[in-house]
Length: 318
Image (cartoon, rainbow, N blue to C red; front, side, top):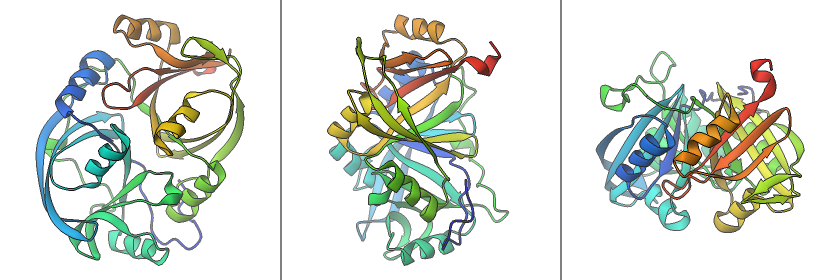
């Protein structure tokens, strides 16, 4: 992550949380824990009073669940009462990945700097027009993705999780989260915006020929542009479909731009796919290209998120 973007005076810490909006937290937790193998979540209800949304102050009640996946927390969010960006997201897009969270050393300076660029918070603590402590930001340049900024501790480190927010020891079958992927219409424009405005990047953009990939049982000829950057140990991937049939074009057609998938490394792709097959989870888009392989799993039915498995031949020196 770059900290010297021109005209930007604040520093983002690496992504520490990824938020998923769901219809039913308990149902999603059961699926992710028992079937997908992500691990154990801690579930609690949270009452939020006096938050500002659409320039109106109101209260809300959320049911949330936390899971630690390596250095990144996965948060499930169900709106029980009130008007929040999560409720609007669910109504407009259905279940799915909604936001990325970053700590900042000086929240006031960050919000002021973003304000000079016309980027205003959409949901925040504080009073109308004066965010304090945390805020969600959105905008066209972000690819229909919300970024949550939150004040770090006085020592410049993320505030420690409370006992309520710390998940029990995981028994996950999946390794810690490696990558979060976004599908966008203009990869260069999105990459430039993330880097110049928030200091995320720079992105390395490449052309990818995916000819021979299997899309729901049939072989396809397709090409994409992919951009990669790191936020601490987590990789951010931007994907722009170029031609041919693929899941990214389908995503743009059905939901528009936005957060698309979570990816995990595996040691043996065939063993992993066989294990998921026993749980009736099959790949919807996959390819073995010799030096590596990927497989997107059919996990959208509960939680609205595609899980991707990644395997690299050279990773294990084979």
